[in-house]
Length: 172
Image 1 (cartoon, rainbow, N blue to C red):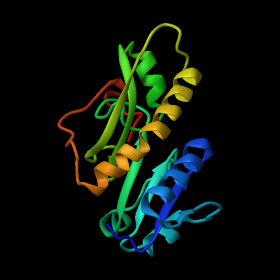
Image 2 (image 1 turned 90 degrees about the vertical axis):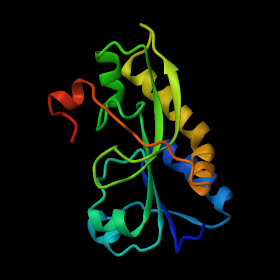
Image 3 (image 1 turned 135 degrees about the vertical axis):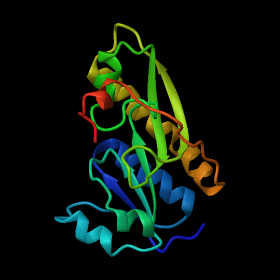
Image 4 (image 1 turned 180 degrees about the horizontal axis):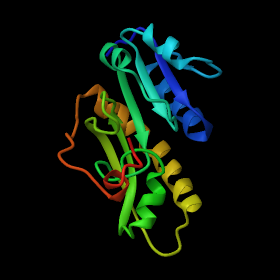
């Protein structure tokens, strides 16, 4: 698998740790795309790149998705709780489990093929903050597996989805 460049976009510990893991995995520089004023302009010029979206809220435009390989970290078990604040929706809906998903990015939000998922059993002791911390640790721990699955073209196609966050229009 050869990419002209590898970029990581996001904030915080997940992004920084995943940058290190990706650099070791691909044996090439992974560029931390930070302090970019206009991501639309930056992304529209990328071709044949791998873009890692880790703890990032930017919505990739059609042209960028079509011209590059993009993977994303989502803090829920897709196809459930697409969009933002997924950890809060998991608690709100009294889900028995939640987790994390590394998935391919498509033009629609959080609909791409799944590279890997890891589950977390929920109980009454979880808060949104403690769940987010647990999810971030799990995202970092499972990232190399996601990269291996990407390299080996091992995907799971999403077949359905939902949750109240989609039904009432909070996640787009």
